[in-house]
Amino acid sequence: QVQLMESGGGSVQAGGSLRLSCAASGYTYSSYCMGWFRQAPGKEREGVAAIDSDGNTVYADSVKGRFAVSKGNPTNSVYLQMSSLKAGDTAMYYCAAGLRVAVGRLLLWNKYNNWGKGTRVTVST
Image 1: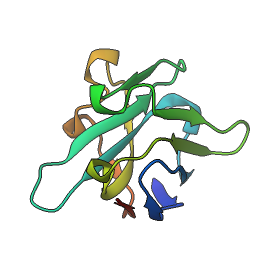
Image 2: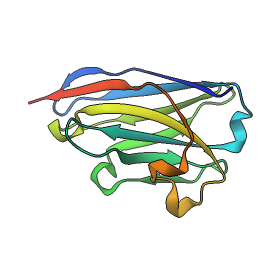
Image 3: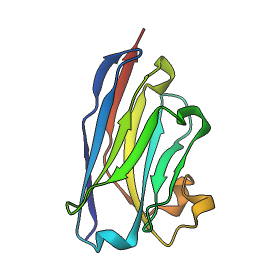
């Protein structure tokens, strides 16, 4: 059974940094694509960053140059390093895992069928 657990969220001032972690278990980690998604109150869930099984990464335009997604090796973890945080980054952040997701679809939440419970990020001005 696939299990994902996020950590690292918290409150930070604008311009600050946070590193989110997602611990994965219960499957062949290296075969999966891993994505980070977020949902702010009253808004739809959106893809933030993702990395596929070959190490290809994609980012939402809103976070390019500020966020970086990476996989742990050999630990079954995926990370989201967030820098130059803005108030607009405030949201619940979720880690997700999916199989055989095309690079062009890595930021589509409906391509993932395994989700963590989320970690909250609050950016204050």
